[in-house]
Length: 183
Image 1 (cartoon, rainbow, N blue to C red):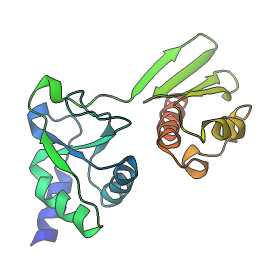
Image 2 (image 1 turned 180 degrees about the vertical axis):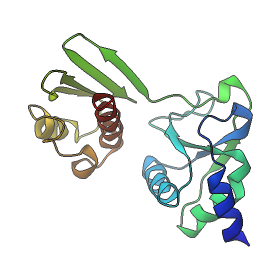
Image 3 (image 1 turned 60 degrees about the vertical axis):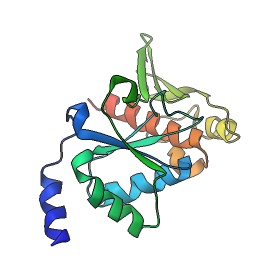
Image 4 (image 1 turned 180 degrees about the horizontal axis):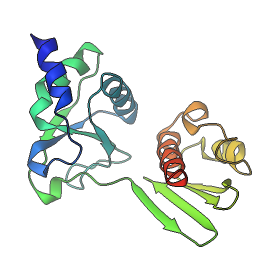
């Protein structure tokens, strides 16, 4: 019965639901958020990793936004994967809105995308990465060394060479930038 409900609910998922229909999972650390995101996306759930609302922020945090009506099904799936959110918060007020992680700035010949505190800038004509900056994690200089000077297609994916929240945020910026370059 649970599998039938799960399959039916997957067909009715919508990213643009009103705030009252969404909730957020708060985890102990970023590593758990990344694991939960991977598990849920692999199973077809429509979720988004977001910045936490200011009311519940406690540092370099991320939260997972999900369709509130699916809370029990998603929680079961997370628990089967050994992941246990610290809390679930319904998005019922503007102060509890998760924060969008992305910001894009067009500088004419250059395009910059920021995800959380990490920024990646390319030359639009060649798609060559000209700058990586932000964050405070120890792998940021290594990520920049491996990626700057290469085109988006030549560069390693940050998720494959980074091991911190900054590497994860840079991966999000890298994906967003790739998406904008193929529009």
